[in-house]
Length: 166
Image (cartoon, rainbow, N blue to C red; front, side, top):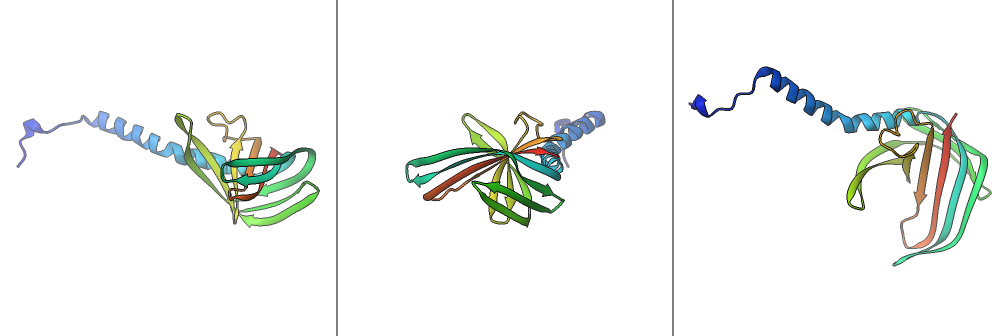
């Protein structure tokens, strides 16, 4: 039997307060992801696209061209599990309907870790940046930036789709 004089006793009210604080902290990350997913659902208009092309080498990227297109370039429509899109980039149309999932992770940026959302659509992967990229920018976002970049050595393509919610 344990000696009660060595046992730590936490008053009931303090226990509930600690439990509540830990529950809130644990739920914050999931809440951010839910806000981001909810923000994506709906129709978006592609208003501009920046494209860079070149060659990815072992020690960096050799850029060949940078182009910016503006105007009504296409649309993305997100439902709970599907995205249908059609947009024109460099005089070529890209259109499809795919399953999508949004992933939230912490990534190293300099001396700190920052939150990053990645939009996965079958074999396509876009970094997803909401609004002005401040904390809580993913809540009720009206502007989103989807960033694609090839990672392997060889021909290099990177483009950013800037979109506004309809």
